[in-house]
Length: 250
Length: 123
Image 1 (spheres, each protein chain N blue to C red):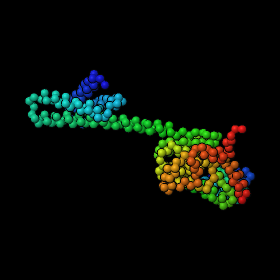
Image 2: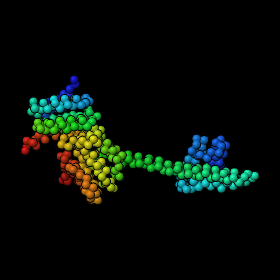
Image 3: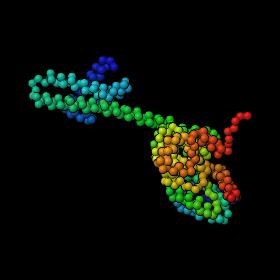
Image 4: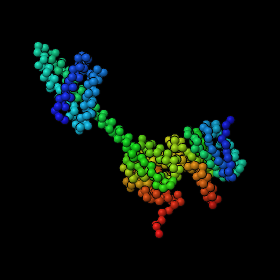
């Protein structure tokens, strides 16, 4: 970022501060409505700086760096005022700039949280494809951690496809699921139960040895759910149930 | 009072729920169905609930009761065409209807019923 841009940002901030302070008098409550323009300006600056790769500390320092200049100015223009008056002015300026600096940190954090939430939503949509392996055989390759919200989406997507495709067999492949806890196992069982109620059968595949151990340790009863080690094994079972068989050519 | 029609196809009874299944109607269905099963000596019952988009725990229990009662009267019950939302609701209510046979549609249900009846004959 060039010096010219820094300078113009400083000037704009100072101009806005001047406007607000002449309007709002001596209030330093930066959350007050009168401070709206300053907050908006700082929010813009923070966002553009964070996009350019500035750290929150650097952005806050931009605001704090005004202290030196403003306080020096205060000293040269306050000839003839009592020490008490000068002291209270210094405190007010200090408090105001501190709050504005902290405000930029807050905006930084909010911007990041927004990014995280958006990415979560995108991942949610990306990671729940229901694929058709064969006529009447659906597969749901699950990737990533399964929490309640995701499982709900997965469950609904799978049941909807079962209905649309009239598929009597669905394979839930959990090769890409890093860990399984009690909640995850419950969710899986619920999905299997709901599919069964609709008249479709579920096979769970891709259970890694570690996860199989966890499931047993947790005392989760998979009941009469068919489980297979790999998607290939599950597919074979599915084909057999559909009355089909893979044979070598000639 | 409205009634749910019970169609007879040989030794199989077909029930299609086309209206909202409120509690009194479900009770009446249980009565009618059990009577009909004994009357005609039915071996199987297919209940199509594809038009049903709302259920509560009572209806869930009625389905289980119907299946249980018919079982005692020597008829297998297959519930077909359950909507995803209904399935999720029943599972969330903790009613997994263990022991009830299900199928995707009437056709698959009939096939399943035939297989069930045949396997009983084999015994």
